[in-house]
Amino acid sequence: MTSPSRALLMHRHRDDVMALLTGSLFLSFGLILFRKVGLLTGGTAGMAFLGHYASDWSFGAWFFAINLPFYVLAWRRKGMEFTLKTLVCVSAISVLSEWLPRWIGIEHVEPLFAAVMGGLLMGCGMLVLFRHQASVGGLGILALVLQERGKVNAGTFQMAVDACIVLAALAVADVQRVALSVLGAVMLNLVLALNHKPGRYMAA
Image (cartoon, rainbow, N blue to C red; front, top):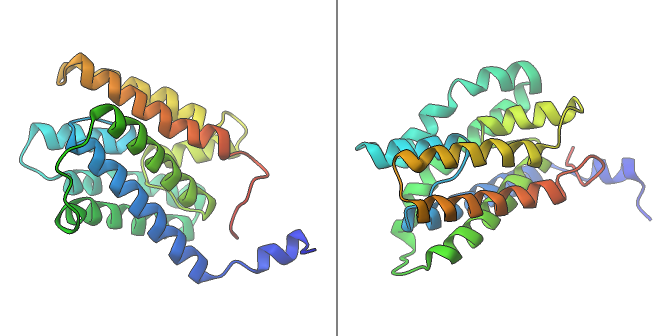
């Protein structure tokens, strides 16, 4: 039987590369499902959606720009490696969210399915990144810092904040879209709340 210390030594850079790619792809595909039916989400991605819907800027451009200030917190609280991994993930999602629609065409998707499946995909993507010491920037960084300090569960914190951000979207979206967006945020954060807990698998 492999000891815990031995298991930690088995994590290599190639594991991180695979994890960052997988997490970024999951998140990008979930965001594409949301965008296809006009849904929103929480965090910096939600703010990027609002900016995208209200301007000529692409979602990817908004997402990359909004996350820039949060790297300061990441550098101070989480260190250089976490910050660089997060920068790579945010950059990858900014690009993939614009490129994936060119590689795969989705003619129709039911909004309810998009909310549930998109939320689950993004939750799984964030979980993969969290477990390999990375994030998608923004509130995810703050959530991880608070959890490590024993203040609150990361998924619970993000669920509360994301719900507030999505509800604020009532100013620019109809009630049905906002309700489905809340459902998507709940699905995303349920994945984190149920799976991202102290003592669970973490790459080192």
